[in-house]
Length: 66
Length: 176
Image 1 (cartoon, each protein chain N blue to C red):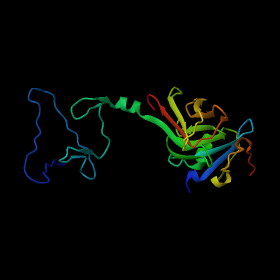
Image 2 (image 1 turned 90 degrees about the vertical axis):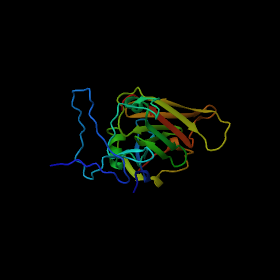
Image 3 (image 1 turned 90 degrees about the horizontal axis):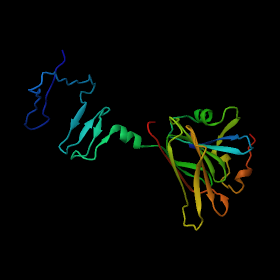
Image 4 (image 1 turned 120 degrees about the vertical axis):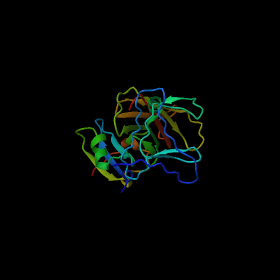
């Protein structure tokens, strides 16, 4: 499965849900991208991209509970 | 004992190797021990093909003009770029040296590089665009420029931060 089929989720210090969209051609695995691009100390989750809504009307109110 | 072979693939003609007559210096032509036996070749169209790396100080056009050093070519290359969809399911269309896009809010994105720049003094050029004509006036600005990432905010002057379908970033720098 390609990196781009996944998303990495974490919540930043002000409560905003951050959705990382991983690149396919960067030479890194999804786990390596998670380690590199998620700030140290943040709990993050790798999920299928279908978990993230495509309706962004209320994007800034998004939260995630595994 | 290794041997040197000079073969014509077809027809006649000749191949000559001449030492400079007025020099006392020894000229050395080194041939690597290459497995397939062919390290470089030319064809009748003037194409020159090298199987490995071509090391050169300066490259010119066929007339010897428009010279560029390999350093100039390297420094002028775009070192990182990305084109991504900032609406709906945010997705990268194509990229170089980018590990991920952080969707950090409506109209706000963080671009993470797969390897760090030497410093944060790279030139970052960002644009945003629509897929259909719109009278909206928007602009994208760069923030938090760092060796490993840069933030892009796209703002509509009428309605604030806004997602758009075409977000583009290109970064240029000296060295890597």
